Length: 73
Image 1 (cartoon, rainbow, N blue to C red):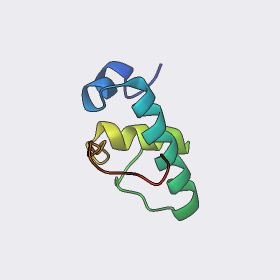
Image 2: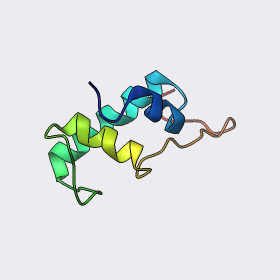
Image 3: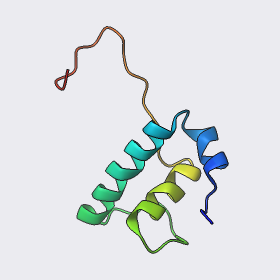
Image 4: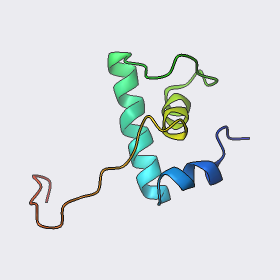
């Protein structure tokens, strides 16, 4: 069973694709830097820790500016 649940995570991030993308990037960042945002984690794995941070409101998705041109486009 996933903790936090997918239903509670979907209230924070509006799409599953964005949720996976944000969690993967943060997990990679946690692995490289060790910069933890919460005092206590239930999960031992980096992806689980990233999902816990999303659930706690420490991570969110930035809205893209429709007029901006990004380097990856």
